[in-house]
Image 1 (cartoon, rainbow, N blue to C red):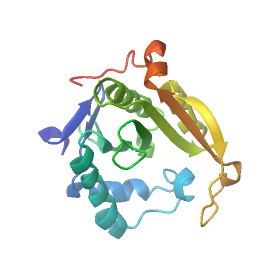
Image 2: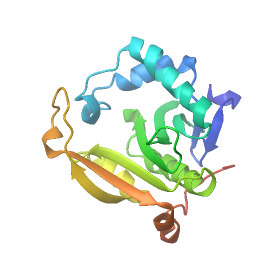
Image 3: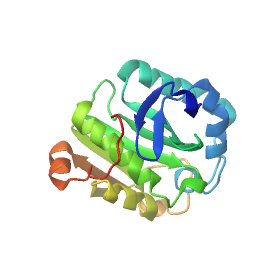
Length: 201
C-alpha cells in the first residue's frame, strides 16, 4: 500500500498520510479490535467487520469525493509502510469548510512516539495555510490525559467540558467530554507549525 504512493495526501518526516481504500478493511478491524485503543471511545468494544466494510469505508470515500482534502486519512510509517492508524480532519458541518474536527486513532505500538502530534500538526498547518480552514476543534473524554496532551502540543486550548447522553456509559464518562480548539489567527502567532516536518505539503 505505502510503497506505491497512490493516494498520498501528506507526508511528514516520519509519516505518510494517504486515502483509505477497500484494501484497508483488515487493518481497520485490527485497530478497532484492540480494547486499549477503544477504551475511551466504546469502553473497549471492537467495531464489527461488517460495519467497517459497509459503512466506514464508504463514508471515507464519500468525503474524498465531496471535499477532496478534508476527511479521514490512513497513516503509515514513512520507513517500511506499516499501518499505524488514522487521522480525521473533516468539516463539522455538512458542506462547510470553515471549521473542521481533528481526531486520531493509532495502534498501541505507535503510542508514545510523538506520531499523533506530528500528524496532527501537519494537518492543522495544511488546513490553515491551504484548505480554507478557519477553526480546528477536537474532542475527547475528560479523563483521556494522553489525547488532551496531544491537543495542547498542537496549539489547541481548552474550551469547555460537557456531558453527552450515551446509550451505554463507559468508565470515565461520568467526568464528561472536553472540547479544545484553535483558530487560524491564534495558531500563526504561536508558531505551533515549527518543526512539524512537513514534506511536499
